Image (cartoon, rainbow, N blue to C red; front, side, top):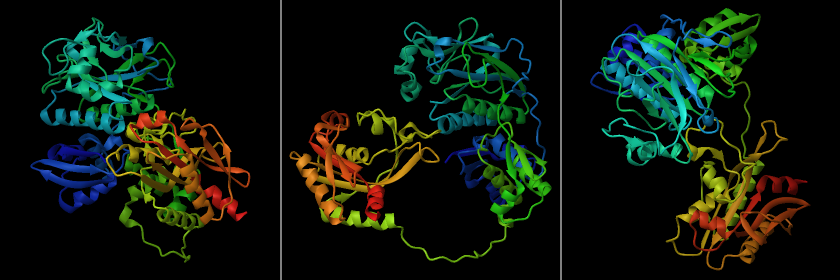
Length: 567
């Protein structure tokens, strides 16, 4: 979970009053935050909700606490919306059409006001790091740059540049490097260069005269991109692959600057291709959609009997505008929030706004006896059988990368379930099979005495159009043997023993599967239905995992076997 450090006096200024001791610690629960200690005048705060990136700054946290306590809710008049763009003069960003299929989106705004002080500068840098690392997937979907407006000329050019021809002086260096050299030589290039290094042309930001602002998402230039204390005019840009995440992050930073006392000057981005928000977008841009909830639904979930006006009064303490429409509540998300995906999110805001400790606990009216499900009982029986056959049980994560679940397994991955907004590309997919997990263990076990016999009875997920949500979760048994003599005969004998002990009469039918050797792979058929697969692992798969011994594996759908046995 994100952790931030805030200057005590700066936070109290945003809140509008000084709050200390237990009162402050309790108040933090409004932001789903916890007090994590202090060093001098710096407070350490841990945020427990990744859906509220607007809270990951001094201004954002202070804003939420101020509004909850009944303080001023600022009006952000600088936002454009669909059909209503703010005037931006010559402040324009022009986008190269070649960026459409690489890093297609960019947004920005300008800032004008008093000189930036130490506390604000540190908070800006912290906000940049938290947004781009946590919310922006380590700069993959969001990267942010801040520049000195008085050192460049509009329009800003967002181009696809030849990495060997274009050059600039990156931040912290004193000599020019080509874009490719920046990737290889600069510390930030080592850290983030992989995001763009595979592209033929790199995303590059310059001004109208060709002066470099940034090699995004890697590093700013050493002059225009070196913001220091005392700077009064700034330009903030963000690039990425998801326009909605980009717009929200832009809105958050713009609201933070405005709350700090700065004037926000809109900037227009002109695209040569279609985007979900159009070809011309003036940022900051309000794109959020209203959400509705019936008051009876609110009361059912909270166990209360709120009137519509009561629910509105509690909900608005969380910063969003709520209106009553008969028995319906209509919530309009604040400019810096986009975490309302379902009516239950409105209920949560009302609950927090009223106060978590104000709800009276109610004893349940129904008392039921708990018991293990049939699937759990069957799964435990299978585990005992595997251990009796000399296998060692393993336990794995259900999330992983496309490299492990798709590329290394030599499959297309059409049925693999992808997480919509993952925090890391290492945990981007739900596993479609237990076998990749077993191979991962084998890949790091080459020094252990052979034979290796491992298994896991766990969950997998695959796409299924017949299901309500388009996916299905399955209890699956996967086991693997690794040894110089591991082959189809061995793994089939192990399968035969398992099926004997669970009283399931099966047959085999030859099948082709790119994970296994052709001609040494078979479907497991029970009552005319395929319940699994068994075979020798393809040498290409073993090579991709770095495994040097033959492996044979099997995977069985335990849920389907249980259903068929019950027929």
